[in-house]
Picture 1 (tube, rainbow, N blue to C red):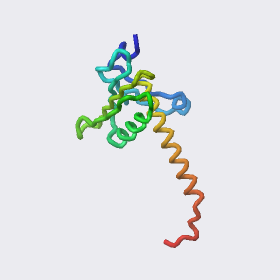
Picture 2: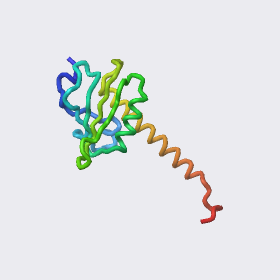
Picture 3: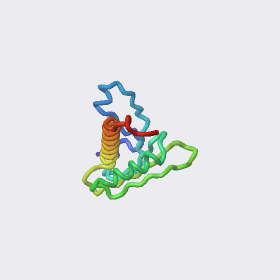
Picture 4: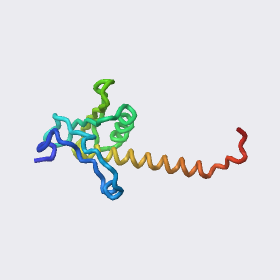
Length: 132
């Protein structure tokens, strides 16, 4: 019996060992597995609280880059609610929960790379010779 089959409305654990070491507070209610997941775990819907199109579109893009993912789409159920629903369906090489974790990790890695590259280039730029 899969984890999805046992707890169809359970929260998806999104903590990282690095977060625990850095004493970062993690909201375990941030991501919820919605009812309607397949019994094999290869298709599932998730709800992410307090997020909007900014995360939804970027996360959908990163998840769709995974060759094991057949479909990924997101929606904002209502503009006055800060909720993001995302649906993931895989070909069977990984579960939808694993695809979500990989997408979140890949997006975090991309953001870290962009931040480091930006900081390096800003630090290397010589502003003393530029006119206002």
